[in-house]
Image (cartoon, rainbow, N blue to C red; front, side, top):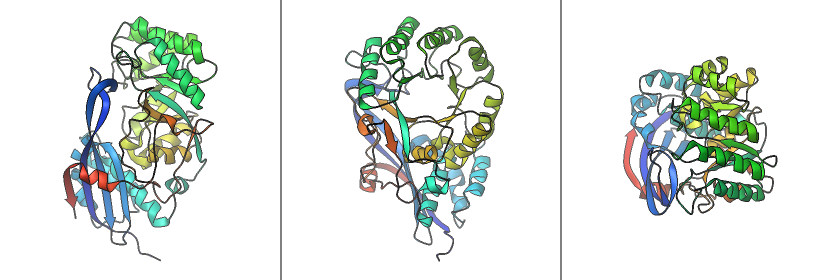
Length: 387
């Protein structure tokens, strides 16, 4: 039997690509359909090498994380790569004044390494629960003419997603416009596909006032929405504000996407400030996110995983109390907006669900995917190595 895998080198690669016909909304954070535009995107890739030849990999995460990983990466050299819990806790402490950036990225790579070491997919190491994951179509935000530019356009696209097999559909509305337009989109989509799909809306913390958030929430009540996510300008962190909103509407609220680590998530749940809880493996890693999932389970609350990717699939596959996998930034004219970083055919896009609206969990060891390192290295903009 092989000895324990000791970390010998850590490599951080920053790289870019371009997404055609996409720009950014006025907030500078949300992609928007924009014919003729090119959105330059920056991302990171991580490789953790060991003395037994097993390499843990994780690519496609936000470049900002790379700025903090060096704060603790050097201290991992010579460590047992299987001590994920201990490494996670130490990274959590080391990054406490730095927004806890980077700790999740390293944790996912260590889980990939562990799966490869044991020859098993991560979801089995976590205690597999299922292999098929019901998905929801999570739209790109409302854009210019020719995109999702009207309530009717959102409803048309919802009908298309229903035909593709999706059991659920989420609106990312416009970053602007009269609140009446947002209300109209909620009601029009509900009129067309309500009762046939679970419906959600995520205004990505854009609404400026509690009053605007309340107006859209009451429209969600009327149309029978499944959840209402991150409605107003607090940035998704006010326990009091969301508890107050819960008291005034019937639609369940989904919060905590913008929190990091276990304790603030638990505080939010205990404050009765959310009905569903968000988990993000990019932020909290697989170790931290599964802690949140189990805490939510103990309180009788469902966790909904943020974004899409192989790590999210493995977590959801090992979770009972979760409803939908997010296929994010889909659009009627852009079938997929994901970076082309996989070599083995793994994809997240509008057309990747089966006839039942589900996606499958990768079955290979670790994350179960093969990264296209030729693409990543060809487009690299920086490299940091610790050994």
